[in-house]
Length: 190
Image (cartoon, rainbow, N blue to C red; front, top):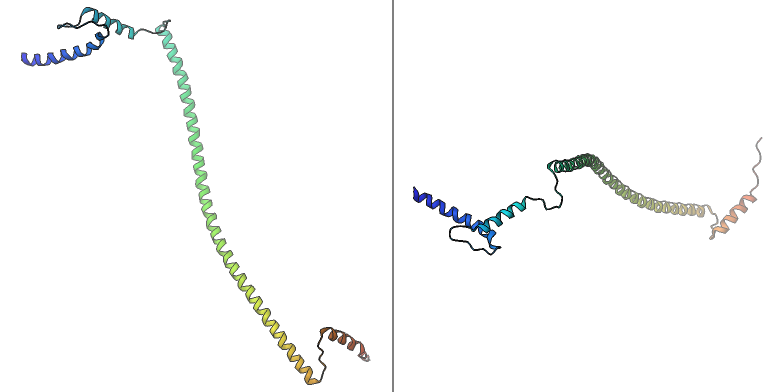
C-alpha cells in the first residue's frame, strides 16, 4: 500500500513543481532540491494579490459598483426590449409582405395565363384576317372577270342589234348625253 501511495505522491509533487517553476524564473532565484525558496513564494503571493486589486486610482465600494452594474443592466434591458420590439415589427412586416407576394404571384400567374390565351386569339384572328384579305382579293378578281364577261356579252348583243361601238369612253359619254338630249320628250298621257 505504501508503494501505491508513493506512486501517486511523486507525480503530484512533480506536477506542482512544474506549475510553480515559471513564477520563479523571472526573479533569477534557483530552486533547491527540496522545494521553493522563501523569496519566490513571497513574489508569487504578491502577484496573486495584485491580480485582484483594482488598477484604477480610485476605488469604488461594493454599493457603487452594484449601482453602476444595475444602471448598465437597466440600459441593456431597455436596449434589449427596444430590439425585441423592432424585431417583432420587422417580423410582422415581413409576414405582411410575404402574404402580399403570395397574392400577387397568384394574380401574376392568372394574368400570364390570360395573356397566353389572348395571344393565341390574336394569332388566330390575324390568320383569319389574312385569309379574309385573300378571299376579298380573289372575289374582286372574280367580280372583275364577271363584269368583263358581262360587258363582252353586252357588246355582242349590241353588234347583233346593229348598234355602233365606239372606241373611246369619252366619246361614249358625250354621245350618250347628246343622244338623250336629241330624244323627243314622251307625249303626256291624259
